[in-house]
Length: 324
Image (cartoon, rainbow, N blue to C red; front, side):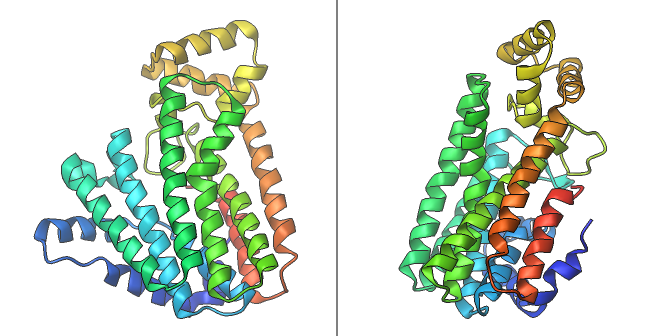
């Protein structure tokens, strides 16, 4: 497991500034809103996305005021989508602590999510860069489309790997792609370098989501949500998708019947998890993740050698090696 401090080291000063500005951007005189904001700040995650913005900018030149502003707005946008996702999925826990909708209710959670999203949009305008504003605007559409596509595939029990890849591209890969792209733009990188950074971020996004999906199949994964939670919501992810294509026909048909009927009892969820593991689903997902990791590294090595590039390499390793 890669040491986070080594990943952050090339942008340690800038990362602290990001954290200060992120916290400062979320302030309200409304008591209930401020209470919800305090909960968000206390439950903040690993900040992989702003770290990606900062490291990419430094690898392409230097971190500017626009880089910090962009890191804040992208983390705000990500935070807003998580709040809304928890409402949609009726999730009661995130990162091991109660979600906003569990503490308050759906009405407050949706409004808080809207407040955070609006704050992100204000920040995007403050960059004064139409290219960045355009990327963020398109990103908002992609994230919404990804969530709707995922709901659609779950409701209709669509068992298709290409459809799965479309969902994670919109849901996760495009966000990390935007982080790397905007980071490079904020540093004044050339068009060619911006494109390479965008591609690097997209590959990293596939790695991130596949790793998250693998966690759902292990009880020991301390990620703040119950094992089998994706399956419980009707989301058939890569390990199970592979097993359904390669497993014994009788067993696969029985599993498909459970999925189509949405008969997600604890016993059936355990059955689906065991079926995925027994038929090489985890190994297949890990192999696919490694392919995207290697592609990301290949693109990254075309950037000039620097401490920031080394930090990005460590970040790529961290994403595929993390345990939560």
